[in-house]
Amino acid sequence: MSARDDLERALDAPARRALLALARTSIALGLAERRPARTEEGAWPRVLWQPAATFVTLETEQGDLRGCRGVLEACRPLPVDVAENAFASAFDDPRFSPLEARELATLRLSISVLTPKEPLEVQSRRALLAAVARGRDGLLVQAGRHRA
Image: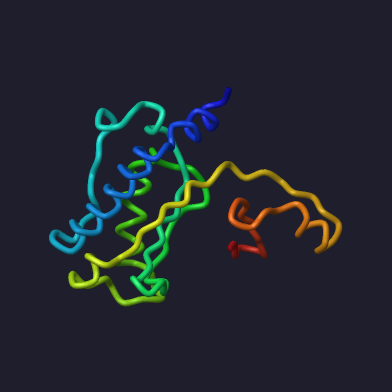
């Protein structure tokens, strides 16, 4: 069993709620003190304190995108990544103005934890569509220095 498998098992409902609470706290601190929440290793189960890549998405109560930031490569412990990306989603998404305090109460947050990238070799668009599942898989497309 790999560390990634352990992490996926550890991301049960209570762990997901705790990470969502951390994300919301990070945004609240951003509003009050202009900084993300800080968290420490001892505050989390060891299995959750491993490098992970996440995206934090913010939506209005109507379901409109309000911010989304993240990283594609695991570079810091999962809770730290969530706190930093929640802050960035609220205050540093270039598509939106910084979040205002009045928006926080109705803001919907979601966290995507990315698995390590795996090469996918396909010969056609049809094969690509057959190889990926909506809602489960993501794709990294690269052209020169640009990635999406």
